[in-house]
Amino acid sequence: MTETDNITGSTDSKHLSWMERNGFPAWLVVFGWIIIAFILFQVVGSVISLVLIYYKTGHIMDLAQSSNLKKYLGYIFIGNTTGQIVFLGLGTLLVTRLAAPKGKVFSFLGFRYNDDIGRMIVLTVFLVLAIQPVIWLLSWINMQIPFPESYLHFEDMQDKILQDFLSGNKQVYWTLFNVALVPAFCEEVLYRGFVLNTLKRKWGVTAAVLISGIVFGLYHVRFTQLIPLAFLGILLAILAWKSGSILPAMAAHFVNNATSVLIAYKFPDYAFSNTNADSLPPVIYIVLGFLVSGFLFYLFIKESNKCIEGDQHV
Amino acid sequence: MEPVDQNSYWSSVILASLIFGVVYFALTIGTGYYVINHQPASVAMSPSSIIGTVVCLFAGFGGMLAVWHHVNEYEVTIQMGRGAVIGIITGLLIGVISFVLVHLWEYIDPNYTSRLMDVQIAIMNSKGNMTAEQQQKMADMMHNRGGMFQVLGALFTTIGLGILNLITGIIGAKIFKGDEAAIVE
Image (cartoon, rainbow over the protein chains, first blue to last red):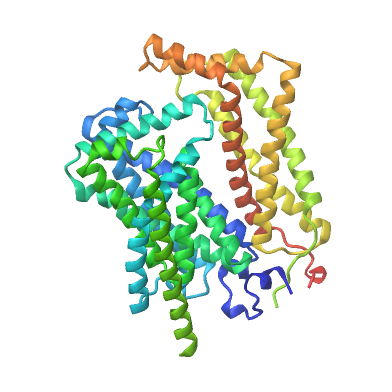
C-alpha cells in the first residue's frame, strides 16, 4: 500500500481528497495550517486594529503599551474577531476543501443535525456548566507550576485590562459576539472540525482527541491556563467525536465563554476575586462538579451510543 | 495508480540544510556586524533590514535545492506533498543549524550579542515614545533576559524558514521532473 493509500485505507482515487492525491501527509496539513492561520490571524488582526485606531485618532498607537491596550480594547476586539472569522473560520473551510473528499466539506467538518444531536446539545450545555468547578481546580493545579515573575505580571496585566473592559462595558451583546459566538464557531471549525477529523483519519481517534485538545490549549498562549484549556479542548473533542457532530462542541464552547462574560458583566467583583486561579474552589463545589458533570457525561455517552445503534439499525 | 516516490530524502535534506544553514549563518553574522558598525539609528527602513529580508528570502530556497537533489539522485518525479515535506524539514534544519552556529560564534567573539543588543536598544530609544525610566527598564530586561529573547527569536525564525521552504519545496516538486522511465512504482 502506498503512503497515499495509508491515509484512508482506500485505493480508489475518486474518494481521495486533493491533499491525499498529491501526497500531502495529514500532520503537515494540520500543523502547517494551524501555524499559518495563527500567524495570519495575529498579524491581520493587529493591522486591522491599528488601522481602526488610526482612522479614529489620526495617530499610530503602540499596542504593546498597556495604557493603549486598555484605551482601545474595543478596536482590538474588532481586529481580533475579523482575524478569527477570516482565517480560523473561512480560511479553515477553504483548507478543508483540500483535506476532505470532493463535495463533502461540511459533512467532513461535522455539520450534522438531527433530534438526537439536539438532545446531546442540551446535555452538553448543562455539562459545561456543571464542570466549571473542575476547570477551576485544574486552573489552581496549573498555577502551582512556577512561572517567571515577569510572565505572571504580563498575564495579570492582560487580566486587569479584560476585567476593566468587561465590568465597564455596557454593550454586553457585542462582547458576547466577540468573546463567545465567534470563537465558538471559528475555533470549533478549526479544532473539532478540521484538526480532529483530519488526524482521526490518519492517526486514529485517541491521538486525534488528545492532540487537538492539547494544541487548542497551546493556541491560547496562556501558559497559566494550559491544563484547564487543554482539558476543555479534549472534552469538546470527545463530545464532537461521540456525537458525530460539531454542533454540541460549538454549543458547549459558546456557553463556557458566554458564562464568563455574563458573570463578569453582572458580578464583576465575584468574577475577578473569588473565582481566580490562585485560590482553590471549596471542596463541596469540586465534589458536586465531578458528580454532576460525570453523570451528565454518562448520559451524553449513552445518548450517543443509542444514536450510533440507531444508525446501524437503519 | 499514481507513482509514489518511497526513496529516503534525508541525504538531500541534510546536504541542502547544511549548505543553506552555513550560508545563512554567515550572512546573519555579516549583517549583525554591519548593524553594529554602521546602523543609522533613526532610519526606519535601513540597508541592514533590507539585507536581512533578502537573506531570509535566500534561505527559503534550501527546500528547492533539496528537492532538486532528491529528484536527480533517484531520477524520480515526486508529488507536491513529498516536496512540501522535504522543504519544511530542510527549512527547520536550516534554522537549527544557523542558531547553533551563531551560539558557537560567541566563543570567537564573546561581545557580539551584547553589542548587537546595545544597538537594537539604541534604535528603539531613537524612535521616541519612551521615557528615560522606560528605556532603562527595557535595556535591563533585554540584557537580563537576552537568552530568552534569542531563543524566541530563533524559534520564530525557524518556523518562518520552515514555511518558506515548504513553499519552495512544493514549487521544486512541480518544476523538477525526473526520468519518467525511472519512476518508482
